[in-house]
Length: 149
Image (tube, rainbow, N blue to C red; front, side, top):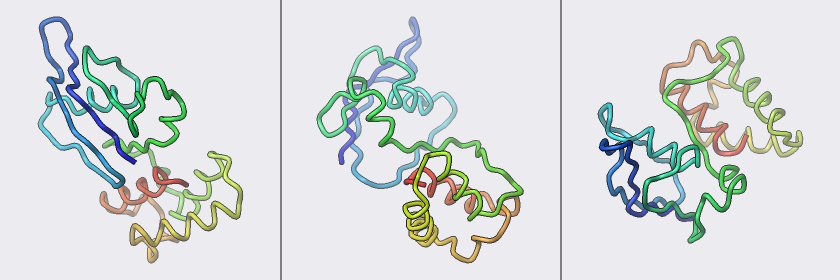
């Protein structure tokens, strides 16, 4: 898996929101950090096909992502800064709920939930309410649902 961003530019009149940005991502989890106005949201909106670039390309394994449409968006995980969690749900209940919304079978959901809770090191928090999680724990819970569940 390779996401290739080449010479991506987005201009609004004379204002350049993103200027000739290039990067290559392989499998993994990445974070975009930068000051306000650096182009992070613009970049994510272009990658997710919510915004058209002025110039440049976004390709997934050599194929233009805008041509892939829903097929590409199904593969892409995105976690915004503001978390949309249900504070009264336990982690496990929340993951089962998200799996049901995605139409996963119970067997697939159970296997994924077990594997991914361990992957993000939240085994000891599975029965705790999300409202009591630290910010980092909430981010890890969201990584789980972005991965598959």
